[in-house]
Length: 326
Length: 195
Image (tube, rainbow over all chains, first blue to last red; front, side):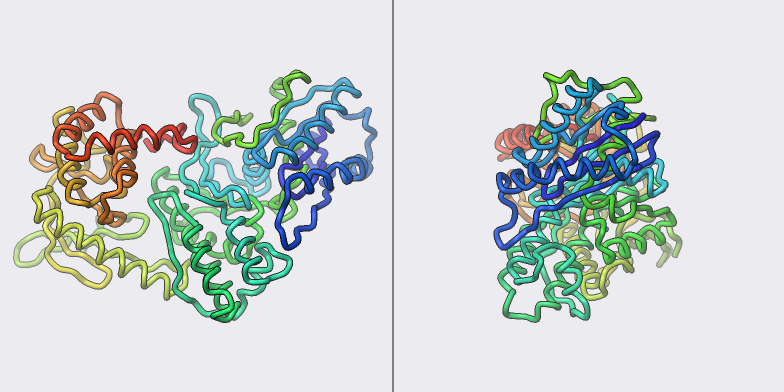
């Protein structure tokens, strides 16, 4: 089934096309994050400007016409309200014009599902790490098939923490990959470490690291922030693996692009004698391809939304979303 | 020394000395984290666990007796029994767990990971084990988390026995139960099932 997926929950407007689980196109345009971070209304404006171009580029890449589309889907949440609206409105307009079925997709489910597919995982403990979210997920069949939350951040997402630290330390551009670059050759400094069972926290770490900026070498600090935060994630994930008796680990979301985090998870998986998998980076960053992929599965099971009922929800919980298949 | 169990952060060995059986819990090195952080976490947690065991023993909460303490390991008395998760669960046992928890909380100690896997049944009496995540605090939130973990892990009938005993025996029981209702309202815990 030829399906177009639209994503605009944060700084990326993405359009992807999926057909029978194969991604034919995955185009995107990103809002440039400056010194002030993301102002939702401004980001949404940029998405409006980029939407048409990105969608056209995706259709062209897939070599299809809009009239070939059989279904359309969009990110219904979680995310920033004004940003989510852009993909929702574009999807509704197209569905109405083309008279095809439409469905909203949970952003976290899309990340986890594309990673399960491309990382060749069947029933993993999935560490989902991005700017707004940091959760440990596992598939659960009751009362309906969904990702249940085994562990979660008490406060902010690990990506948000890295971005904030990058801004405080004057790293440019102010996001996680700059922290990763700056960490080369660093030495370890003691920073607050908080894990409670399978939950974790990053605000204490961020506050202390921000206080230390300018007082200690930036590469030592970047290195220590990464090591501390990722160790928290690994410890909580390892506990989840043992509790649930799972044989696979996956990592997804924007921070899954970090090679040190992957290395640590690989080391833990090897020690436990289990498999570790992840998707190519293009699918760890926000993208429309994963929305098309997850949405196509919903539509193939006959699940779609009426045009008038196409909602968005800033706080769309991952564990309230149905996961197709099984 | 014989390995009898392997947890997320520690290995449990059984060993015999002076004609008696003991248990040794050793926090193992994790290769994924840098040595500085690894040494710090293992040493801190071992010390904190030993401190909690001593304090609980002193106030009369049933815990394994502490025999010897190393930098990353604790040698303790071996309890002959089964984990609560593997035995027939009765209201009577949960009443006893509720009493123990009340005594522990009133003395400013929280367990931090209270599940049926961390209660050992020995001569029909519950012993609390595994204090790796315990802390010394009088915060209602931390105490409520102890109750919440157990509530999520067992049937509502068994939990009821625990909560009733807890309320009767703890000075701050009412405040903690009220906070528990608060914690449960937060979205993040609504669908959580830890089995």
